[in-house]
Image 1 (cartoon, rainbow, N blue to C red):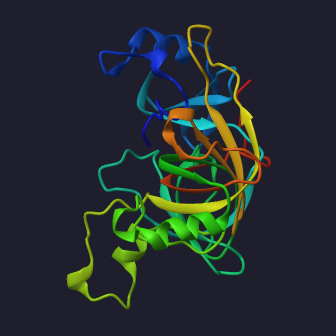
Image 2 (cartoon, helix red, strand yellow):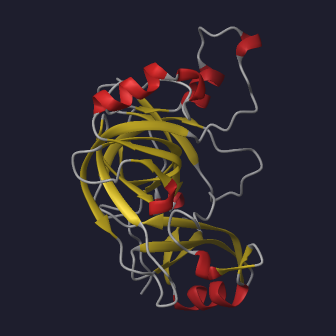
Length: 272
């Protein structure tokens, strides 16, 4: 999963287009360890609630870092049923991207799983708890649902989004285009990334996150919206949002990625 530098205002960690190794090593040294069936996750939480999670395995007496995730702690909990492993073939063993549905089976979403290896072996049809956050790439804010519909209807060809979503929808368009059994093979683009979702919903609350570091010029915003699967925190900086100011009662539509932490409800697995 990418490190969401822009969404989480982490530019202070970047030099010449890459994350500064000294700052990353400092976080690694302060991290809490959690065990996960022979693997490890090293978690460091910044004052803003941003979590850096180093995915690691042991090789003899050495610890090898396979990759790094960013996540944002929050209170938006979903219960979902994974039904398809969408993890890219080139991903490391501790990465996981899954397609999920809910108990009603009236929708599908695709998400990256954070701390995935803490999960026991999943049985088909069993639901898992996850704390979910969204990181948008393109985000628009409207005064109302009606304004969103009107804007799309007036200019569908120039819209930043390929379709008008029904209210509170989370829709993995690329995944559906690749795996819809009713779609002819010649219309499927196998190169589309599965993990991009389209989302829309009313804004229930907005808060400004504390700064992650005193050198930051500004922090980021967290808007909590209503979706078909439950409440969803959406993390972005003010300059990413197009349209009206994002406040309670407005309506957002975006494309982006979901991140779901499954080390919850008894699966935290912290090492003392």
